[in-house]
Amino acid sequence: MDKKIVFYILLTIFILLSSCMPSLAEEEIEWNQELEGTILDWGGSVEIDGYVIRAEDFNENKLAFVSISKDGEELERGALSNGYTLVYNDEIKVYADEVKPNYEVLEKDGVEFKTGKWSPTIRINVFLRGKPDIDINLETGEESYDPKNLDDWDRNINATIILKNTGKAKAEDLNVIIDTGELELLEGKLTHTYYSAEKDETLKKIDLLMDMPEPLEDTDYYINVSVTGYDIKGAKFEWNVSKSIEIKKIWDLIVTKSISENRYMGELVYVYVNVRNDGICSINGITITDFLENDTGMEMVEEVDLEKSLSLKAGESAANVFKYTLLPKKPGTYTFPNAVAAFTLPNGKYEEVESTNTVETYIEGPYIVLTKKVDLQQLEVGEKLTVTLTATNTGNVDASVTVSDTLPSEAKFISGETGFREILNEGGSKTVSYMLQMNRKGKIQLPPAKASFLDLEDYKGEVYSEGQPVYVGVPIEIEAKEEESGSEETTGSEQKKDSQSSETAASGASESSETNRTEGEDDTPGFGLILTGLVISGVVGLRKKGLL
Image (tube, helix red, strand yellow):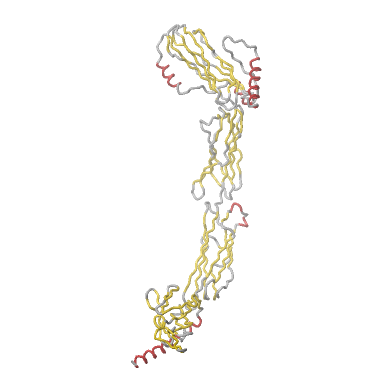
């Protein structure tokens, strides 16, 4: 038993001596305290940065046997008393602040004595080796550059690099390598060396000046900074940062299409297409195309070729590439297709640019649709035929409408109305009918009916219905059946004006329109036009007063 006690005493002395002999490197280590005043009881442990510190055992001489482990492997073990440390590989240090046996004490007759029971503890502070950490602050004048908005002398990129040691230990032998990629360096150095960087030390900034590229497409360029250095133990560290800079394309073609926004029926709509090269490079072989769809509700007054080719230098413009006039065929809101410029860049990439300011055009005015229908297409001599006339205003302005029809010589008027005069509101319609007796055998063509209209803006015109063939005492011709099937697709006639009326409406001049009358009606010449104006004015007045 005595030998065993002696062995433990010698072992304890050896451990204490070995743990108290710091190496030369340890004296220069910059320790960073991570835990303070942590108390471990028998078998207790604490973990920090992956290391596990455990109180393995205690003895009566106020010694605590402590181990350091990581990933299940014991790395270091030692006996600690007050004020002593246990260090592993200059990476972690455990300092024994106080070892207490904590014996159970009893008092009897005023005298205290210890029992055999005790609960020893050790209070420790834990330190980790400090390591350097270089913060790289890379700044450029702008995040994005547009060469088109800069003068020649100002097409450069400035960059500033600032290094600061934000770690917990000194860094030594720092090497800085800068890669500007496709950005050509004009001023500054791409490699720098620093002897050391103390904790919280900011090193001298690095300034760079680079030439600005002129890309044909929006492009991201990169600046990369790499820093390597060592700590007191010779361990190598590396820090990297990268920054992207967007450079906008150097070409910019602008196509504008201007259109008269509001017009009245009969007034001309003017269209202009202009092109400008707003970039800093020439663009060659530009094909400009404009479009006028067949169902646009407009007709070109004079035919114009809507495709042209041209080239533009930087900053050059081409005014009135297209200039043409349109005549509205029908009221309503019209949206015109964009003009398109197509070209190929020097890098071979095909580009298309559309006009961006296309506007809607609103056309005001009445639009009269007149239809003429018969109840029988085939009948016998002496049989009666009913003809129905319907006028509808599909426009957006009220108009006075006079409808008249003409009877063929082969027919006899029986009864009804062959026409009317009416103010048709927007969307308004009126229908009349009359009866004929057909007195001659054969194919008889009923002539088209006519509708004349006039509004308060002195816009006027005439439209006609389709003629109607009837077969009296003869079979319907095959051609007639085909015509009939084809005509069923159109319920109303196209808006038509005679050449004189069209030209007058287009020029804005006013002219009195012919007034047709129904059979048995006798009007004083010129009175119909005056009466029409009075009726329209009366309706407008009643509407303003809310009576209509």
